[in-house]
Amino acid sequence: MRVLIMQEVSPAGLAELEGHELVRGSDPSGCDGVVCYLIDRIDEAFLATPGLRGLATVSVGLDHIDLAAAERHRIPIAYTPDVLTEATADLTFALLLGAARRLGQSERYLRAGRWQSWSFDLLLGTDVHGKTLGIIGPGRIGRAVARRADGFSMRVLFAGRDRSELERVLAESDFVVVTVPLSESTRHLIGAAELARMKQGAILVNTSRGPVVDEAALAESLASGHLGGAGLDVFENEPHVHPALLACENALMVPHIASATRETRDGMARLACRGLAQILRGERPPNLANPQVWPVEAESR
Image (cartoon, rainbow, N blue to C red; front, side, top):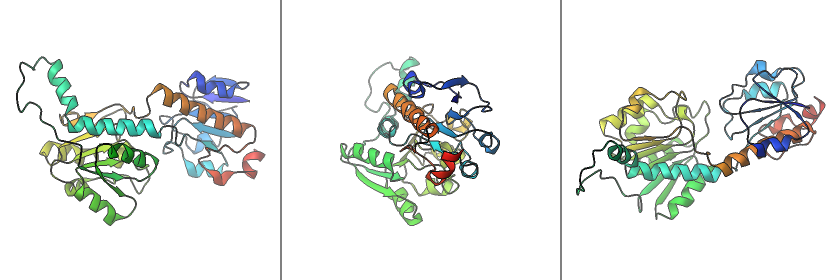
């Protein structure tokens, strides 16, 4: 069968599609399957392509795909849950530590040649051990972050969908980590009011999706000194970063690299492509994002 590869996929992933004709580009016409990434917009017109039997996204996030349209057109979607959990939790905790100890500011200070001598109060940060960590989103990644916090003797609080739970976590935590998926209910979940509820000097870390946090409000809180810092891997309009955030020295920011380890990216590519290969064979993959389209309609396409 013919499979469209929309972005670079590691050889480990492509090996799962051995025997299929692989084409590169963005036009699904004439293709039975598609492999895409978060940066590819998969809309109604794309999913209505005649003959399209299945899609695989090398991501755990699905907000780039019109899931309602996929259901209407009975297109099964393979995705990559679990495989990136540990790498994302590692990066989340790295951002937490880096923001707490002002690593971004410290490196810029050193590279600029400003370090002339040791001093008692140079670039003072804040302790992590023994502090309270609030995790907004008690899913796989949130629980993995909590396991890492245990090694730092942190008190861990979780907030799910309950508003009062969220408000308590924001008010009591020294560090707040956001790990929720993006949906209409979580867009700007953390806005000006929520940031104002956080402790003076608290640190916010976001490794979920950029639009979950109101960037303008976050920049204002950082600039005013209410928040002590932020660690960000994701942004509202990637790859654009809000200019006010770029001006905040106390924001530690990296370019969406939470899953960027060789082992994890290979694992993601293998899982996604293996799932698509199963779909094309008429088999239900274990990593099916929209099980409601399976089995009869998917097999009959």
